[in-house]
Image (tube, rainbow over all chains, first blue to last red):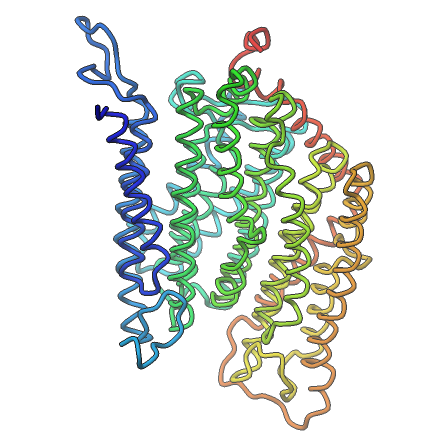
Length: 116
Length: 513
């Protein structure tokens, strides 16, 4: 049977694998996508670190029988904001760098004729 | 905590935050006013840091609960000898670099230099003061985001290319940092460093694997910031491509990595952690030895003086982490002294190199023969002093630092390796700097004519700022006695984490451990 834990864990694994693969690419656009995938993976991972609980409130409630951990949710929020800002910055920086140098490769070496 | 002291602690984080925002919002188009505001902020930070060092030297660790939320639920700022010392060296460096930036007009080369500079200081001071692991991540991000802006300041194709790499590698680093923090939270349920220390020490053996993984991940991230081999590749390109002014300020950035390694590996994964004590140390030592060798051998590969200074930073980080990785009180005191020295020496070298490059017109910083340039006598003297300091020859503090490090690691089982590497690389460093210096100053002096410049800004101010950094090195040498006493006491404090834990969580936690 497929459990919630298995689903979340394999989602993190897939996102991380895709992210690592893309980050190691040569051109900036796949690298930026890879960074985005990695940050998605981390967000889900951080969220899961508060344990996976269903139908429990994160803040005080008189009727509640138990709670889910609110802290990872706050951490994820911070991480999302930072990752979002940084992705936007990297996109602009990569674009600027491409327009100014005419090269879209992370290592900055010029394009060979063959890979155009 | 003493109320007055708590104001100073909060001020060293709040002041640059408020000043940065104020300059950005109100003084964007008023260069003179924003310069005054920036210098004023830097001076105030030096004053605050002096007060805090004086306070911390009393030996009592002070913690300030932000928003009065008690630890471990709220975020605390903690002042001990190490953090006070790091605040002081940051503030002194920032003030001198700011004077240099203003007198040479670097701050006019692009937008928002002053706000970015203040935000950089906010991130640095916050990282040194915070007692919360996630908050450390946030301050890392603050200082990194500001550093991206500063690194690209002035722009140009080379800088943009290096900038893209610098940003990407640091983003990957931040991702790993979050994994490490997340793992640790998942196992222990806390992020407060003092509370983590207590819980890691009490963790059931079944959790040790996860905690060790987290410790190694965090150390990897800090090693990336500290340019420890094999994670040093980003540094020479980034530091050589940015302006000399910014590179001088970045001399403190690698030390943030070293600071974080020291803090986490003595407090959280310290002697009390049982099986997990110094779990990263066996990895740091060989990496540090390799870094030292790579850094000093890299000096020979340098085609420009900027590359030379950047490789020297790598080498000095290696030397520093050799001493750190032994993780004994005897070695940590000298390591802390070497942090002070290598920050100031690295920055001085970058400033002197920048002064030289500015005067050589189209020859720039390339280590090639070129006609004489303006102020060549004075600058050759400054370069000589900066090189002596960086390599670690007497009489400047580099010699004292290396001597103390060699003495401090004597009891270690790896002492032979550390001694061999440090002594050999010092000889290599002397050769490399002599080669560069003799090409630029000695052989070039025989060439007819002089390089003429249309205009040269900050002829005196820039030289004075670089000279001031060298003077602080001389001061560090003359006052080596009191300073080493302070660093030894700081090391003592690091290896007795009970004091830190009690200061943060209240004396009762002593019984819980």
